[in-house]
Image (cartoon, rainbow, N blue to C red; front, top):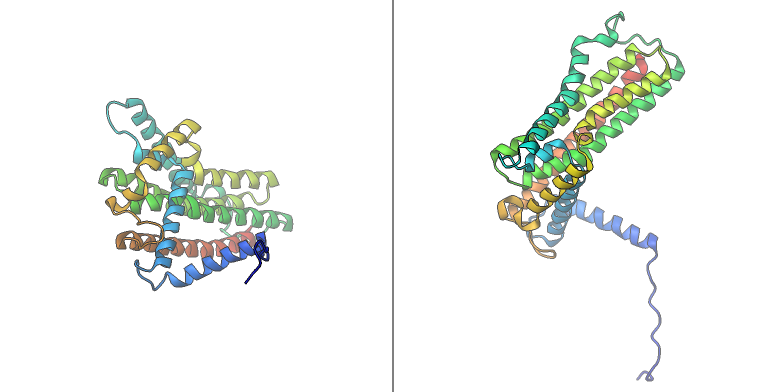
Length: 290
């Protein structure tokens, strides 16, 4: 029998690196198990809840005019906010989609060139063009991981009626068209101005990046805070999927919510794969043709 008051050997505490490695192992296990499991599996249910909560965080963080229109009070009691929402929505669509496609259709930057791939710029210009193009692709991927993820969450889990859902659908479509249009426009702008000053390439790249984020840039701090508060109010756990919810931690998750997050992530992975593959080809082609 142990003597009274005898001290127990101290337990070894985990280091910060050990904790980080454990998190990586847990994430890998969840990724491997969720594909073929059901909503009753506790591990997979916890994975689904964490992904839903992550998507909700993206919706709250990446406030855009499309999100604002989704939760705006469309009534005669708030005429100024209605006019503001319509005006900003118009500006966002024009700058994000119409402007890049006008550049594409008119071919103005390369109209005086013999072809769309002259391959006549200096090595320094090609290096700068390659770096800026790669930056554009990474920016586009970040938009998918954040803004499109947030819009996808609102589309899949928050039901405010058919009319309001059109703003989210319009936002997703505008993002996809804007990515394609801005990529094509940047190609023409870089080719057409390959012999110009280096600063021109930087400014053109920033302009196309601005086109992709204009719907967020139009949201000031006051309207952004207002939008986030209203999204948070309608996106609580028990309200998701028409009141089905996402279950409690440590328990199963409703089938509708489980299927919803799986479909959303599958669509997200498909879009990311498409952007990564086409983006790499686009960077190589643009660098060569400058």
